Length: 392
Ligand SMILES: Cc1ncc(COP(=O)(O)O)c(C=O)c1O
Image (tube, rainbow, N blue to C red; front, top):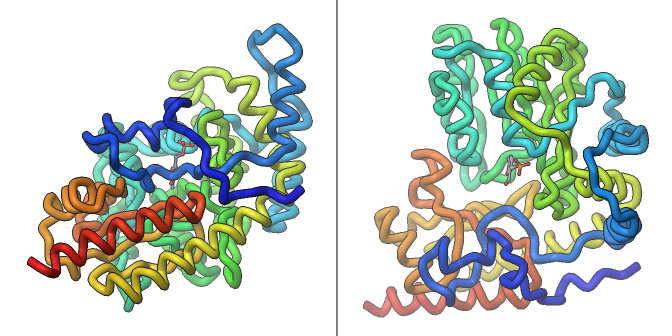
């Protein structure tokens, strides 16, 4: 079927986090283009599967159906040629709970854990809240694209004795799809030093034309045996509210340790999450093809608009995700002023770049997973507010 992604839905009435702007931004006239979910309806097969299950009026604890496991196994093979076994799959109620459980299970208090800044803010707390030591490998800006500082990365493991690495692949907020060479070099360093890789691949199916995602663990047997891969339908199919994801852990010992932490920290999966995920994985590709085209057109539009009309703001063109990292340093504002500028003057709700780490200072993150009309309105508001400042 043909989906209409131009349709604007009223999401405020559903208590959407994204549209809860009064609480988040302190005013009700802010247009929200921040947290990573999309203002698009889900694939029709997901609606059908949910409706069907709803007709049965008992909602007790659920077991995981063989169909769910098959859908994950088939999807990873079909999309990435990664062949996994059912035993490797552990169900989790979200990727961040899984990342936290992996940190707890695979490292000790006081161990150094590496991340690459700027990065998704909960990565930082997955280390600090669990009483591990942060070891930051800052990404390097090369032109308008992030690259890895391998010398520093190696030093974190070989000199400083880091025990684990939380990889964001593809990268949020920079939108990088890491290449085979980059993944190989990172993996060899971490595993060569006796560490483990916790690979968050939540954005792995939102890939722009011309790029291909490679699951870290698919690169070698050694990588598979020393990693936990977090995979989920939530970003791809816009169902994060269902809280379902999987951790894929080929190494039985690591899996047992992970399962112990998981058992302590997390409950059983929800009925509807499992059903939505299975339907999306099995029958969501028609929708996904269409939504990716729409997102890519929105990315083109936003990048062209800003380049032409607001040269003070430089968008980083994402290779994956519907998130655009905006270099706002040309506005010449301190971070707090920058944050206030977007809320009070532009009246657009973006993510504050500094929450992604010190390297995010001077940046903001824009979510273009929305109808074109909303994006146009947001960009027009930003242009108007920047123009008003220029005049001062
Ligand atoms: C890189 C990354 N990991 C994890 C999450 C959150 O995943 P979950 O809601 O499954 O915990 C997000 C959400 O934006 C994300 O961008």
